[in-house]
Image 1 (cartoon, rainbow, N blue to C red):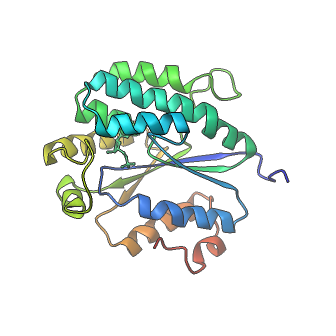
Image 2: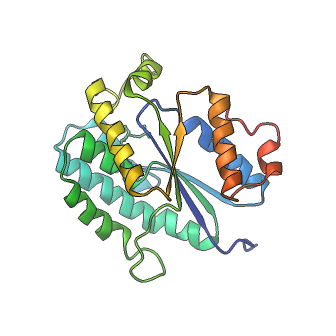
Image 3: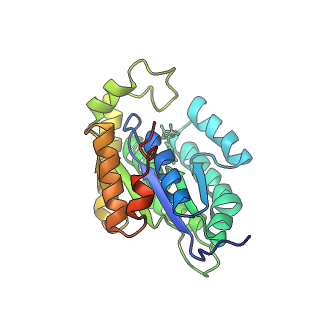
Length: 230
Ligand code: TMP
């Protein structure tokens, strides 16, 4: 059956490692489904077989910042072509755990890679995938889970064997957090800041409020039991 929703909705989730975004994505997926929307839940780097292979390289193999940035964008191009654009064309809600803001925050602010070069890559990779000629594909909304680097480090401590990014020192994450803040300042309409230092229930409440205010979800879809991420 064709979806009655002709317009797809693309939402990305961002924040430094340990900011707690992942636990809320499933809750939002459930709420959108209750509202009758088809949901594509995906992540970056990754989301396709090829992009997942590139993810494994990025997270575990040593490389210089240019290689890292190119792998992130190569994975993104495949993900856009194979998953994100087809889902938006069907009218799905696409919930994507990280997107290009992560490249600006981690490879740009974190590693010090040239932001102008990232902007060129962003345009190359995110143009020509959408049906509208010349459209730069971007999320319609980005939920930015903002948490001071020290707090995120405390939450992550001992949680699992760290990957190449999680193993970075606090100073790296302070730069990444500043990188996200700069991206949010540059695109205030797309970004919504969520204060992640609050309790999980309070964070969910902020997300629900935001969805109501933007008219993306109704009370009924948000109020039902099980909405709060487990
Ligand atoms: P995750 O643990 O949230 O799935 O993200 C994987 C790691 O990849 C995380 O530490 C951030 C990093 N990353 C980048 O460095 N650049 C990117 O473009 C993306 C999407 C993620």
